[in-house]
Image 1 (cartoon, rainbow, N blue to C red):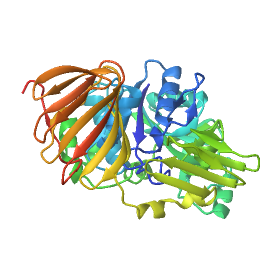
Image 2: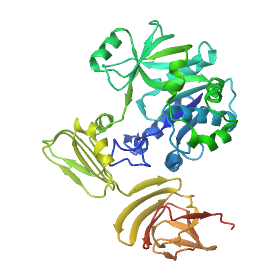
Image 3: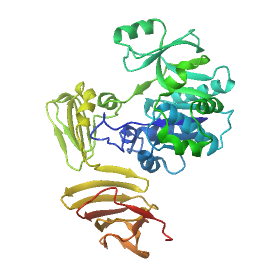
Image 4: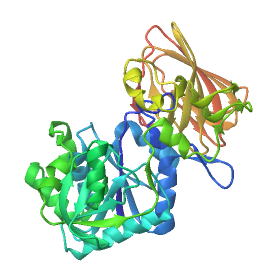
Length: 438
């Protein structure tokens, strides 16, 4: 199975746990059997591999999410990087070209596309496999998954099938309706359009060449910023007469809001939190190293992270995006390919960060022109290189780097350090990367 996971999201609806580089699919809220937690992207990737261990998984995403994907899934997963956001048709066209030109997938093979963040069980991925097998038959150019609706939702478009069979021709599509209209659609046998579909690789590749002037993946990547923003539905689906739909009646949830996300939690609290006996239907996710105490609350969501604190009525939590749009703040937490960092203090002329490097990983060899840095190693063992000079470090060691000097650190074991940045103009843009040989 060749599967493309669409990983977008601006990180607005699940503030303060999400931000511009940490979208909802990277938040670890699902409890595993060993007591640890996994994110949506980790859960979906694990489920895919459980159904098809040989599946080729490619994640279509923006460059801001690449480090988090590598951090959570490792280096083996394929990533089709969008240089900028151009909606779903350019993203799927680029991912398809990536599969063909970089991964070597045959143009006759089927490709399944779906969002990276549904809350589903293993039967969903069995259905994805069947979807790909149906597309491989060539009876239609596109095969959609039609999800059996459980209520008259206003959030989804609707697919009207021509028959009640498991797989049938698509009669027509309907835009997102109001509740009254949605009830009428459901009475007609309509299915939710969850944005899940399959096709033979050559079909989308041909469509891409019809609508975009490019030669191969590398050329399309270079021209990406010039492409017109358009969704796959508008560019392809609505113009394609040969479409089938396969029904799916299993559990399927879009965890796009605080309310739906907390409903999927296995327990009412994650992190250090205390609810007294008078609390009802209260959910707490706490990423801070301080306790959160809730008393006498009903139907409330509390979330605390270095980005901020949210206390909201469950229903009102769905309307958070316009409020967060007004907030301008520095990124306080991010996962990188080598580990993670958390900002612990911001002051005029200084920034203090707690850095965690995963065993066997290294930062880029880099320098800063406008700031000095000090590394205080608090735990673990590793190696530091400063201007070409290598030395081992362990808990208690201090390394000082003046502006302009080149430096990196590698972790032998998990390595934690406190980084203090000192300068008049501290900026994420003040960074120049080098090869270690230079």
